[in-house]
Image 1 (cartoon, rainbow, N blue to C red):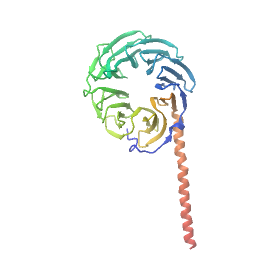
Image 2 (image 1 turned 90 degrees about the horizontal axis):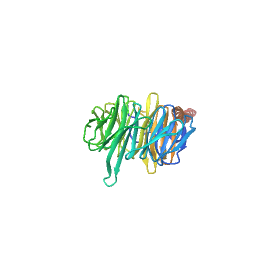
Image 3 (image 1 turned 45 degrees about the vertical axis):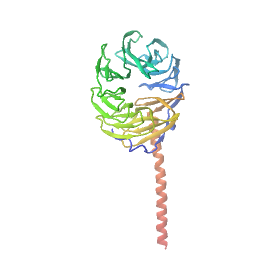
Image 4 (image 1 turned 180 degrees about the horizontal axis):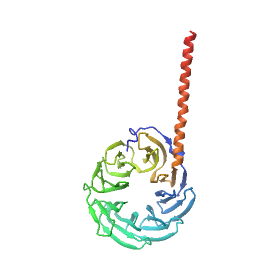
Length: 376
């Protein structure tokens, strides 16, 4: 992965707002989005609404669940949502509720694993300003509990990769818990005693970020140490991008070699989506008060491809063909790869005639000067 730009002041690029494929409204702040390989879009809101649009942008269904949607897990037949204190299983084609189960504390994450569902719940204590108890649950596809594992640590990341389903833990144990089988689970220490804050999956494995800035692999090997707590971590086709709580974004190769870095406002979300001429695109939303500036960069030396201002971005998801952003004002904004690449080509082609016109005018002046000299 080569640097996408030479610094924070790269070229402007195309207006992202003019290249959107569709914009829909959830009618409440969007807290989670998901797009599948068939370009179906799912969005969940702060008040529990869940909506689905098909690949053509037509509304399929809208349902109301218990509470704020914190995460989605998509199976062959079911869309399972972490909704407040509940897990809610919806038929992905109709939105009809199959079942709902209450957890002990807020439902934070959910993932399919070997045909079952694993979910994380946590209890937050306002007086201690910290999570005091968490649990990991396993349910069948029909919503029947298989087991529950209670713990003092909060699992901040639940990631599936190859034969492993793992959770990155906060204090006191920190490190990684292997959830691939049943309890008791194997615990692996992190490279440092700092809490694990975030994780991401790549084609080569799993990476975790820690509060002290450490980025490490599942085998414990340290990839890099950044300045500040790792807030966001995105594994790219090649390498990864880590962003600290202070808004410093760093791009590195798979082995941790620095490619580029940039400082700016705090980042609310980031992801990889689309590719152009074999170059993957990195999407990043930086806060600007009540709004966000969303930027798209090519992960080579092509620089910033596009940017746009919109309501504060709260959630992102993307595939090779579609990119979806959920905003605080309820907007669900979708970009299509084919359409976006055509707009990028049009933007670059518009600049060419302007350059030719200026060059032609200069040549005309030179010819006029030469003619005047000859006349004299």
